[in-house]
Image (cartoon, rainbow, N blue to C red; front, top):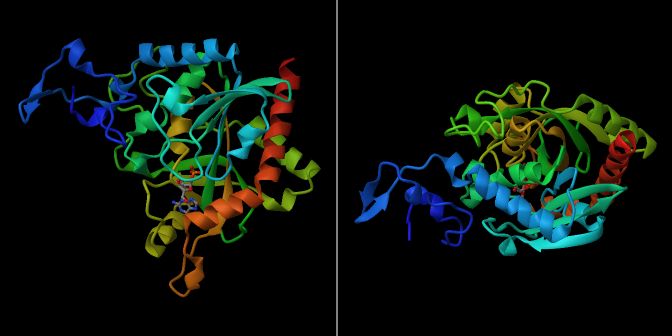
Length: 328
Ligand SMILES: O=P(O)(O)O[C@H]1O[C@H](CO)[C@@H](O)[C@H]1O
Ligand SMILES: Nc1nc2[nH]cnc2c(=O)[nH]1
C-alpha cells in the first residue's frame, strides 16, 4: 500500500486516488517505502475520471446537461430534482467523502424544468485536507458525463457594506487567494483532453446567465436582495480576521468563502459555461469597533441558508428552465 500524501485523504483511506507507483517514475523513499512526488493533477488521470463518469451515466441512464454544486445549507437545490437517481459518494468508485456539516455527500441525477441535471449535495473543500485538484475533480466528472453548464452555489460572508444577510450575490468575478499563494487545481502536467495549459479566465462568469438571473430576480420580486459582485476563496477553515477582511475589501472583494473558485477554474479549463452565486449568510466585521456578535459561525451560516433555500431553489429552477427552453 502506498503511504504518499495523495493516498491519505480524510479518514486515512486511499479512496479517490490513483497510485502512480505502478506507472513508473523516479521513486524516493520514506521509512523504507517507495515515494514518488506526485503533482496533484495526477491524482485523477483522464481515464479515472472517465470511469467515474461512465458509472454515473450507466447507473442513471442519463447524460446530464447542467451540473449544480450545492453550497453549505443549500442541499435542497438537489431535492427539487424530479425522478432522482441518487449516488452516495461512498458508493461511487474513486470518489472522496464529504466531511462537513450541511454537505450530505450524495450525487443526485434527474430532471429539473425539463433539463437533465446532476447535483452535488456536498462539495469538497481544501480545509478538509483535500488538494484543490481533488476538490474540483467532480467538475471534470460532470464534463465527461456531458454537462455543459456549471451552476456553483455557496454560503459566504458579506464584505460589501450594502449587502444584508439573506441577500444573493451573483458572481461576476473572483479573486483567487489560493492562486496568489501558488496553489491551483490545474497544477501539474496538463492533459489537453480537458483543456489548454494556460486557460484565460476573463469572462469566466457567463454574462447572459447573470442578466437572465437579474431578470428572474425582478420577476420574483427580490431585486433589492440581488447584487452582482466579486467573490474570494480563502483556505479556511477559520473565518477571517478584521485586517484580512479590510484587505479583501480594498481589493474589491464583495463576499468571502472557502470554495467555488477552484471549481470555476476547472470548469472554465474544460470550457463549461459557468453561473455562480453566493448566499450572504453573515455580515463580515470590517472594523475593530464592530459588534462582537458579528463573528461568523457555521451554525448561523446553516440557519440563514435554510431560511433562503426557497428563493435560491426558485432562482436556479427558473434559470434552468430558460436554458432548457432556449436549447429546445
Ligand atoms: O462554500 P460553501 O461550501 O457553501 O461553505 C461555506 O460555509 C462554510 C463555513 O461556514 C465553508 O465551507 C464555506 O466555504
Ligand atoms: N471564509 C468565509 N467563509 C464563509 N462562509 C460563510 N460565511 C463565511 C465567512 O464569513 N468567511
